[in-house]
Image 1 (cartoon, rainbow, N blue to C red):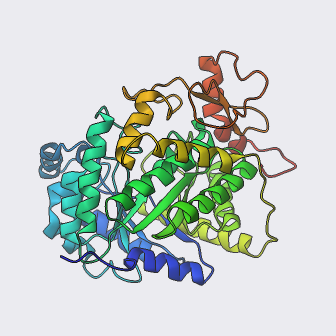
Image 2 (image 1 turned 135 degrees about the vertical axis):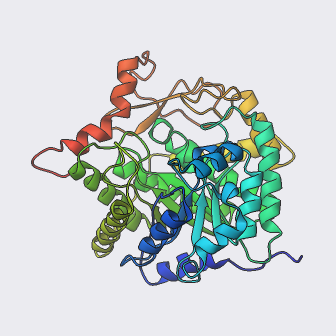
Length: 423
């Protein structure tokens, strides 16, 4: 089969929306049955915004326990996502019939370090897009050895590259433990995974970044991500995706709305093409279809209002230079991107703060200091030109200090100052 040329319909949709000045908004939604999932997709499809659909798989499918997923379906048990492999390709095609199309592409979101069976199922079902990566879906979510995940993802990328219609693949590298990582590390991992995808035949990809705790820093980071994607991935069809804050979420409805709308404004200011939203009940339970629709509409309206504002100045604290140094150095460590990634982690040259995976050194630390950007602490073997450490960053981080960092956005959006919006 000849490899596909040009972007697939997922990317064509995102490009068309961007050319019309619209931010594409997308939920993180998944339900166990075909009927529930179809109702969710149909509700998202008719939202008054530029939307793409999401099928988020369940926890059993993520770890390839398809027998347990099938048993849960047979017993009528609740699942926290759609067990695509257990349902099978025919049922998934039935789910998508009359809903998915050029005006409403659909992405499968999963979290699997070894996604071979899932990728076979989504290809057979004609899914438009999926996401993850050999590092971003291995180290945070599994005990699978990194080298094994790299090999599995290489095979999966080649599987997608062999389809007649391009399947879009999004790197989750920009979301690695979110607020606990320096932005330069998130950016470099997303670009490195993009290079890995390209090396294995894919030309239709996206790079990601997760909203953190400082808007100016986030704005700089997204501009650095876009500049580096243009340099390193310029021969691919790529776009950028922003995730609404991935850490401890506000508990009040008002706080959750504030944080969601802030992410939409950030996406609009930075030129980001697509936003993954969160709902008002994110801190307490799995959201309903109605709550997902509400989040999409609120995000779209906030982005529209921001689009008419004056362009923001872009800070320059060295994020671009740090990420460029990490990418460049990592690529010297192996004969291909996969080998380079494995060796970089083995040497501690890539090191995810607070990540407990056995193939991660876990010697690097990041901490928030007013005005709450993520600064490097104890960089050890990081291949960066300078460590942006502030006085006191080498102080021992206590459990209380870590919890205060983790809950920072929850506190400030649930209880903002009376005189100003949280910034």
